[in-house]
Image 1: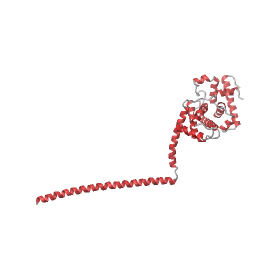
Image 2: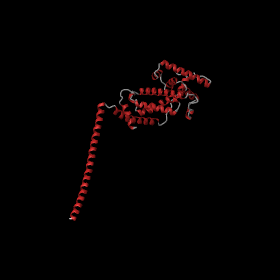
Image 3: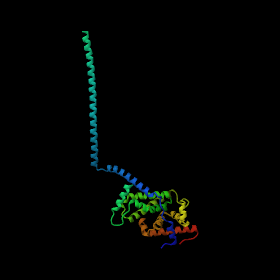
Image 4: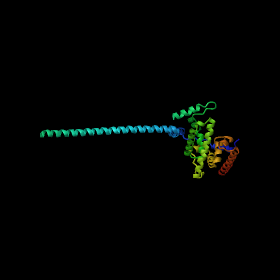
Length: 110
Length: 184
């Protein structure tokens, strides 16, 4: 049984309503938090992978890098070879022309 | 937003047997005034109370999988809201001592609806020590039984009774001095 004072207190402490968009704001914050957690979870999973899996993944990445490096080196070698070939052909062409000119002068002097 | 609602609804639907949990969105809509009011009685600041109530629901969202029933949901919300409100009130108190001069002026609506005594009592409750304030709010705003309050605040029932009687005595004394007459 409540006293009149307690009844008055009960009346005074009535519930208050928050702003009208309260629920929408809560749901928006929850959704943002869920998205942030999902992003974090990806990196967290990666970090907590078992050692052998992490080693395997690292090995695969290293092999890929090595393969790419070798391919690049081969390509560079081919490019240099082609350039040397072009230079050699040019030198031979120049030498041929000179020889032809000398031959021509020798023929004229005779 | 739709994904969130669907996820929470399906979670609720899987619980058979006792009363089924509402969706998370429905839970917020249903209990927002309770959580906000608890925060309001401690902080007497609409922005701070709103923020605190939102934080409580954000925490609920994180722990939604652990909520077992509507009764558990209500208990959980009251417990978290009360403890957070007590902490927030303590922090505020550390910054500046709460006094009548510092409490918000009632809005126009409040002036219309509340009698002078109600308004005065609200302010007096806000000036009570945190423990007494929490038992008074839970007892008279939330209309909880003494045993429920004891469980929620991890106290003995006798301690709750003592806190309530001390708080009532304090409030009666203040009201008597203010109005010049006593209320039993």
